[in-house]
Image (tube, rainbow, N blue to C red; front, side, top):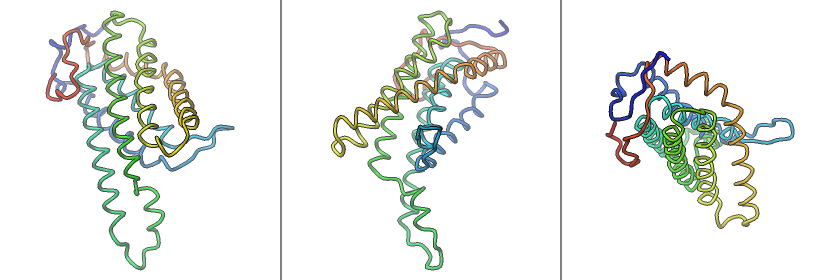
Length: 237
């Protein structure tokens, strides 16, 4: 191997890595776009999925990459930046939609369809994102230590199984609890969860390629043996 194995306590500062900032920027952009395209329903053969269902699982792949290559603290920083960016976008979208449109501008309804976020759905998605991403990163980091860095496929799928379960259950209950029947809610959770896990399984070869390439490029392989897993310690490395 052309990279060194280190524990989190001896890992380099995130600012010294060559690709972290670029990957972080792409991660935040993908996260924001997944919220903007949520209204589009896509036909994939007999299946119907929203734009968000196609885009949002990519953030979990990014979470796996951040944790596997750069460690839990890198993933924690990315999660918080994504959380703040999503909240800011939702708040700004609601504010701009609420402003009175110019009399000769006929696109208010279309604009509101994209940027007029429903407050309950915003709260649901933010809470679910935060809980699910941290669950994903925590499981990924712990499994890496337990498997001594082996079986990457098991770690990516296992962390997604945990993270997406938390995300899907939380977002559906907060967003739709009390407004639909329990059977409908269970169906929404099961179908959404199944699709996201299958998405991750299908993306495993690409995840392998990116992770191994980044480890060689950055020259490091981080194990979170001594990490602080408190999600609120965002200044910790």
